Length: 64
Image 1: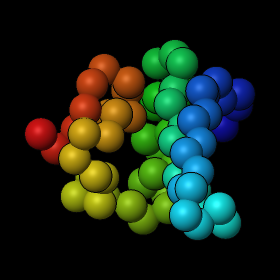
Image 2: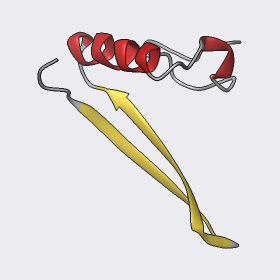
Image 3: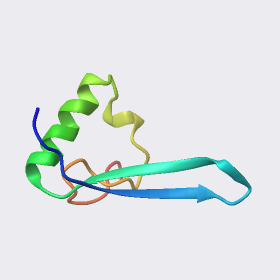
Image 4: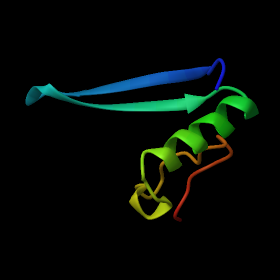
């Protein structure tokens, strides 16, 4: 598939330090396309994306 460029954000829960949320945000269009392909291969659907989450292409929130 090639290289993938993404920013990673990790949020830790203060009351549950062993729980965290990770977000991978593509930094270019090719990486956005690759993440979309990976999402499809993983069997995820857009309906499973939480409202307000960044779209795979990084252009804004989805499901709003």
